[in-house]
Image (tube, rainbow, N blue to C red; front, side, top):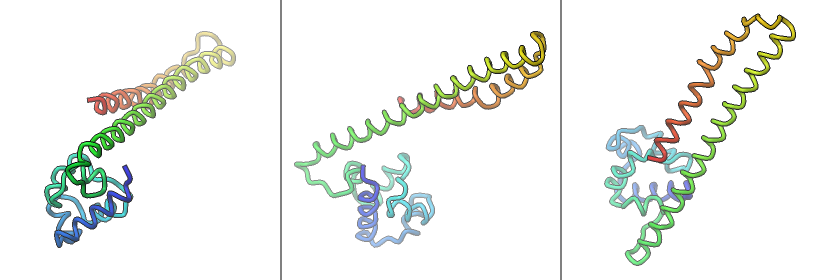
Length: 158
């Protein structure tokens, strides 16, 4: 998906309908600044707005994601291209989430063993004062990070 191409397409369709950014924003329940960001190719509309945006601009989602009007003969091939692009984007997002999850897990294991080593070396084998700090870090930072990654992973796969 070419965001700048999609943005120009949104701009042209909005102008054809004779709508201002403010008017389109009001109909979709977003700000005119959001419309401007879409049209400049800086961001994409949220997926929950795609259908409403397409209805307002008298286009379909396939045309929106292609960034151009599609005739009937090219419709299926463009739909397949868009599907493949979306699938690749989802797959890359899942890979990034898994990398973040593994980094958090490795950091947790390293922190745990470093704590055990330094406690034993400098404080003696039975001093666990730093262990409480590590547990707090796990509960406050690492554990929520892992849960967030899993929730996002689940939501994307769904």
